[in-house]
Amino acid sequence: MPKLLYASASPYSAKVRMAAAYAGLAIEAVPTKTDDQPSMLIGANPLGKIPTLLLDEGGVVYDSRAITQYLNRLSKNALFPRNPDKRTEAEVLEALADGICDCALSIVYERRSRPEEHVYQPWIDKQWVKVTRSLDYLNANPPKLPKKITVGQIALRATLGYLSLRFAGKWEKGHGRLTRWAARFDEKFPELKDCIPS
Ligand SMILES: N[C@@H](CCC(=O)N[C@@H](CS)C(=O)NCC(=O)O)C(=O)O
Image (cartoon, rainbow, N blue to C red):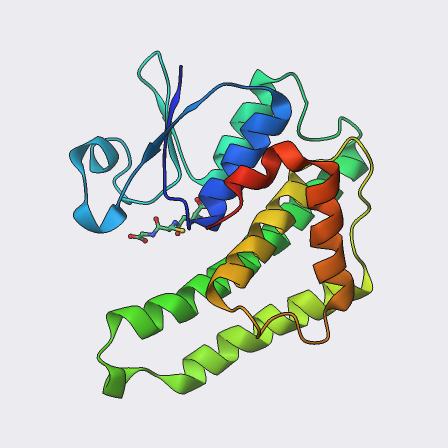
């Protein structure tokens, strides 16, 4: 069974675990601390990032978007539509959801890795503008939630979970439709709830 190096707080890992569960693909999730630079991770992925998927036959797949494409091929298109326009739409939604995480994560890393007096607030503010602008767009245009979803909706649910973990009480303001969207997602797909960032 493929092994997924992951962390429970990581939104990209959450997306991949949810995608695998949704597609009915078994993976062994291996908790991994990137700060410790474990050899299993560094030996497979020189970037030292999670999620990293170790394949049975010895190969490796990273980053999360390469992994969701890999899982889609493995599951014979359970995760992305075949129709080219709809597929592009799903891929762009995944990119937007991941992009929000990129900005949110850079804020978290800025605060975590610099001494307090060196934290650069204009950088944090710039990243937060990107987050809120993206959330405003998604709040005005919430993705549909049919029975058959794509990695796009899965990625968005993982992202909102990450924001609730790290920016609770901050991201929700003015984004009521999105908070309700997340609740509806959890009602419709309770089997994916365990993978949401925590
Ligand atoms: N674009 C990458 C981002 C992965 C990423 O940044 N993961 C974070 C955890 S959420 C990580 O590994 N951070 C440790 C590091 O950058 O050294 C993906 O989609 O997989």
